[in-house]
Image (tube, rainbow, N blue to C red; front, side, top):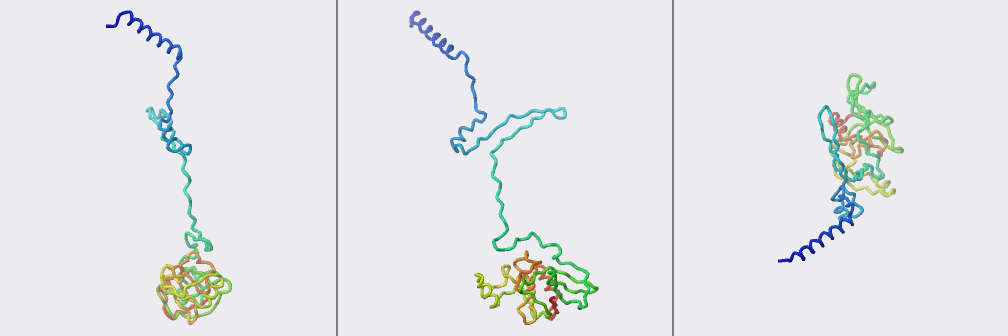
Length: 250
């Protein structure tokens, strides 16, 4: 059993130590916690590149006599704006979202001496007219020959073909080769074929009324002399005319 004298000395030592501690911290420093306790962990994981999540205090306000609590949720670091992808290909005209309204098929007044069923192509204004009864015509937008490839004349449709194949004329092959463009000797019919969905051949010439794999060119002078139409339009015209139909290009 500890003697009373020894016990008293021990108690005095403890009290003295506490007194010294109290003197050292006469005003104890406050305990400060980070507003975001996860920040140190985030900084360890990502270094200075990571922006910590910041929390804000909820705000209390009164509305219509009732207390409601509006919470401000986590504010995150701003994300980069999404990148846009251009639909423009180098060396190719801009792809339009839709054909200009005047080049869509429509029934119009048309004063002509040509018989119903005749096709009249106005290359200057880029329109093809299928003459109907009663001074009317069904009008379509077309693409026509580029400068140096314009022509005019009257022919008849001598052949019709669905999803025609394409054999580039030798003159075209040579002309494009001089520009560094090498055309295939032959291309099967299909969506990638420049003749499109239908073709109507004019007389014994190399010219045709045909579809296209580049619908954004309708309304322009871009072809090597052929009359091109949107695929849906050439299919419509194809079903309305027969072999022997008179075609006037002017």
